[in-house]
Amino acid sequence: MADYKFHLLVCGGTGCHASNSDVLAENLKAELAEHKLSEEVQVVSTGCFGFCEKGPIVKVVPDNTFYTQVAPDDARDIVEEHVIKGRKVERLLYVDPNKKEQIGDSKHMDFYKKQLRIALRNCGFINPENIDEAIARDSYAAMAKVLSEMTPKDVIQVIKESGLRGRGGGGFPTGLKWEIAANNEADQKYVVCNADEGDPGAFMDRSILEGDPHTVLEAMAICGYSMGADKGVIYIRAEYPLAIHRLKVALKQAREYGLLGTNIMDTGFNHDIELRYGAGAFVCGEETALIRSMEGKRGEPTSKPPFPAQEGFNKKPTNVNNVETFANIPPIILKGSDWFSSIGSEKSKGTKVFALAGKINNVGLIEVPMGTTLREVIYEIGGGIKDGKKFKAVQTGGPSGGCLTEKHLDTPIDFDNLLAVGSMMGSGGMIVMDEDDCMVSVAKFFLEFTVEESCGKCAPCRIGNKRLHELLVKITEGKATKKDIRNMRNLCHVIKDTSLCGLGQTSPNPVLSTLENFYDEYMEHVENHNCPAGQCKALMRYYVLPDKCIGCGACARACPVGAISGERKKEHVIDQHLCIKCGACLEKCKFDSIIVK
Image: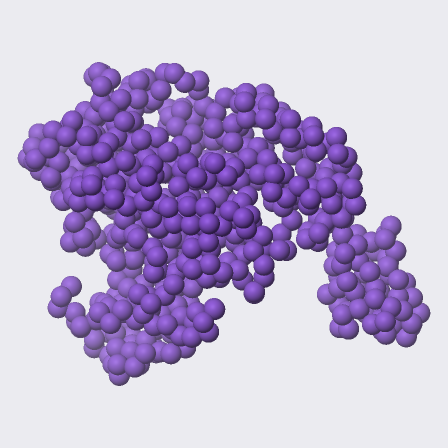
């Protein structure tokens, strides 16, 4: 790579692929070939840069110029202006939404300033389908150290001392989990990577697999060495075709290089990995349900004990960690437990990857040290709320988490602090909401998801969440009473206390947190049959403002049910009994004479 004058790094994650970044990369190569620059400039399709809001992204190295929202047709300008003439393409530079200024270097962008990329360290830097580039960034160096210098107990001790906790949502100490599996004797053991990422809006694990698959393969082999397992399985949802493709390429390359298979690095250690595909069931993110699915059975959780470390896949001791957890292992081995434990908070070490989404300027994938506050994430990294709207809530932890308010913005993000304020870390979803969001509808949305994804094995989850959802529907339709609110709160606690697995035990969290933090909004729905945010369709009312209506009749002609009447050049009236709240009248009115309450 040192022989090239420039490297054009093109985002090759799923989001940018959907915006034709693959075509952009080919166009760049064609332009370079046309100008006979292919020997001087290299185009590299990488993994996700994280700044999804502004993709596709092209980063020019070594001058670190950062181009955003690049279209395939922009390839000519990048080559002719930047590569040949040495002039930045101004119109493609990032514009800070708050400072209203162009920023051409990612080092000066607020989005990246407070991030610390450990799990994402190689994403956006290497071609994930080229093992040589991964090795140049220290891939498999940790495995070499482990196999040549450390005993299995040494490895487990380092992971324990690092303080790494599982990043899949439970937060169980990773080193302890490995130790339990190592202490259970068996003729066969398994290492399982949970890549079944099902939270709405979550794409953390997918991005790691798409951008740096070798880090997961290496970490699984290290885990296998520590616990005496020569077989690994990556359970990944079939809806991740790009991640699956890159894993297949990585597995093939690792075997060709002797980094997987038999007698790895001539040490006598054997370990190989296969892929198993999930069908997209959210409950299969729970480790016992995942194991049953891998065995070809219905994906349902089982009672614990026995734990997977005792009796897991094929009834053998099995260690299950998610993608992000594994991605932290190689740097811990190389840099030491003291280095890792110096990052983060007292009980939550290291960093956490979040999928930052919703009503925020800088949507994307971020990685921050544990202990970073919600305010720093939303207003500094996230760039604040879109369109100058007022912040209302942030949902952390996906369907299992809670909605936090302005009073929680200075809460440090870690496992214990989020639990203390009624939410949770989860796998890393973070959805920001503004003043236009109805919190009752938000709770209903997550309950709809949970009801759909419940495996149905236990009655509290199967029936309880259905009844809970029905109560929320009743509230959003203006048909509920105060008694329904009391019943809903009681039902939430019953479901939490009696469900079999984590899906049911945490499913009431969005309801309980919104009841706690937005009780007045619930009561406005119940007592006044009004949705303050104007989002609950059954409670919406369309009205004609008499002082603005000129009687043009455009609204009446647009109404599909004839709910609007009035003479020409005189004010019109909407019949609330006939109105279906389709919004056609509001769309057609050119005089702002129709309002929604």
